Amino acid sequence: MTKATETMTNTTVDTAAHDATGARDMTKPVLRLDDIRKSFGSTQVLRGISFEIRPHEVVALLGPSGSGKSTLMKCVNLLEQVDDGQIWLGDTDITDPRANQDQIRSRIGVVFQQFNLFPHMSVMKNVTLAAIKVHHWDRDRAEARALELLDRIGMRDKAGAYPDQLSGGQQQRVAIARALMTDPELLLLDEITSALDPMLVGEVLNMVAELKSQGTTILMATHEMSFAHDAADRIVLLRHGVIAENGTPREVMDESQNPETQEFFAHFRH
Image 1 (cartoon, one colour):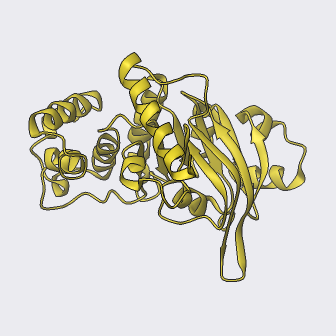
Image 2: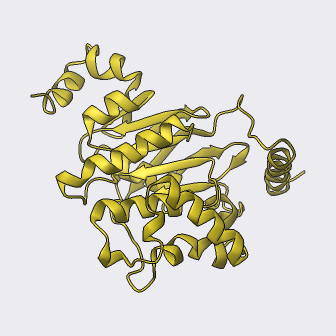
């Protein structure tokens, strides 16, 4: 059996198992990174990153600017190709160039710093667009799922509104609803509060806390240290393209004996 055939078979088996049982296999990592390396020209940005995320786990990806957080997130959501190493989503090697990228993207929800909502479309159309156009859902199914999600984030009454009629926090919550449309196995949150007015950060972080309470598996890159401390199950701290720390928030943020780690977190303490 070729690697491509094996990948396709694994994916089919995974899908069938999920359909038959109504639940995903809780014994396997949702995401596994094995020795990920990435360079831009002569600059090594990621230098052997390995960690995994278990079902229902929230992992906060922290680190100073230039540590490799953004590049790592782009590799996981297939916006950048790795130079070496493998990224596994369940039993699927998503770094295999022969893998079905559209199918993989339907299994990963992504929310970026910018809301990326289409200004000429209503909230409902923004949330349902990919499900209908890319994943070929019928409109009734997509709109029913969208209303369920909008209700969940307190935005059902805004289904007919346009992005310029919403606050930044509301727009980001809509972007989160859009990312959840296909019930992804993994939700990537890439600095989702960076573009928000400080007064609006709390409502978006409350939304993430609610997703955590509902069992959503999340990898989030963030500068919101107090939130990471309180909401994350685990902290992965990057420094110079390698993992400097990997542990619980208490182990990494409060108890680390590494002077560089202590100095990094000291900047966020008052």
